Length: 203
Image (cartoon, rainbow, N blue to C red):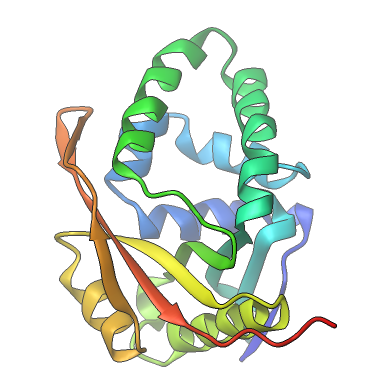
């Protein structure tokens, strides 16, 4: 197995895998064109879904897993670029999305300075249980330490028991439970989980 930086032409693999991580949330948030929107944003720099922040896991040259991560500075800097990219893609459909994003913002937790944030971790269903998710998580944590971060963080759905057990096994702890939000007729709630990673000195 290999883990490497993503390339812009790999947008179809990115969208396919990211949708595995949020099969209810992402369509409820972004609407029926969610896959096309993810592909559009992935190919462009300076947004929170850009290939610049993505690592792929490969087996026999096939992309089978994804990790999307960033620090607080990147998250705050590229938020406006993400919104601009969505506006460019969706055009007249942006206003309803804007109000849905406000609801998601209400239930999410901020990324603080010194945290390296895992926005998405997903493995193709037929490759689960083979240690690929753990390998991607290890790479994510190593990058956080190399950047001098003191903590890694992620959000997991309250009712995703398998994901919660996985992160607990890997040393993550529950930090805070967010509010429940109704989106597209479905209710969502997330828990922030964190892990101390003892970032390396950058001096």
